[in-house]
Length: 157
Image 1: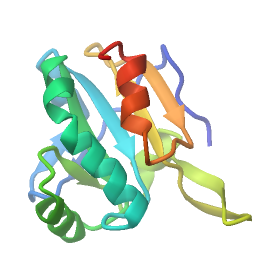
Image 2 (image 1 turned 180 degrees about the vertical axis):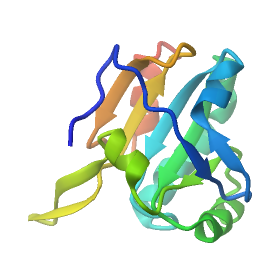
Image 3 (image 1 turned 60 degrees about the vertical axis):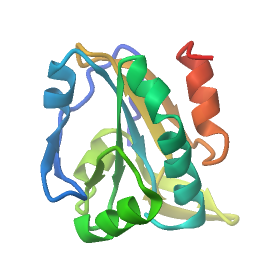
Image 4 (image 1 turned 120 degrees about the vertical axis):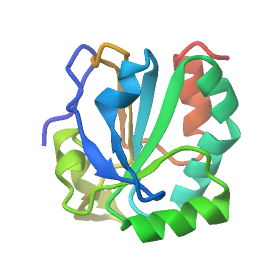
C-alpha cells in the first residue's frame, strides 16, 4: 500500500467516533487548524495506551499551536468510548473497522511483529496542513517517545 508523503493531498474521511458522532477531516481543517492524525492498532493495549496518553499529556501545547489531534483504529466506537473514558482522552478517537481509511493513508499493510510478517495497522502519524496537504508523514513509529519527537519536528520544543 502506498504511503503518504509531504505535499500529497490527504484523503478526506468521515468516521464514527467514540462519542457516537461523526468526524470529517475536511470539517476539522475548515476551521483553519492543522490536524495530527495518528493510526494505532488497538485501544487499551500497552503501546497504544502509552501513545494515547502521551498525546493527552501534550494536547494543550499541540492545540495551542493550531493542531487538532485525531486517533484512528479499527476498534468499534464502543471500545473506543471505554478507552477514551478510562484514559481521559480529550481528543476524538475514530473507528475504521473496514480499514478503508487506514489503507488510503498507508497505515494498513504488512509489518514485522515478533519476527513474523503479519498484516495489520502500521503505527503512523500524519500531520495535515489546513489546506489539506500532508506536511509530515511518519510510519512505523514507536509508541514511547513518539510525541516528543513529533513536537521537535513541528518546532514546538
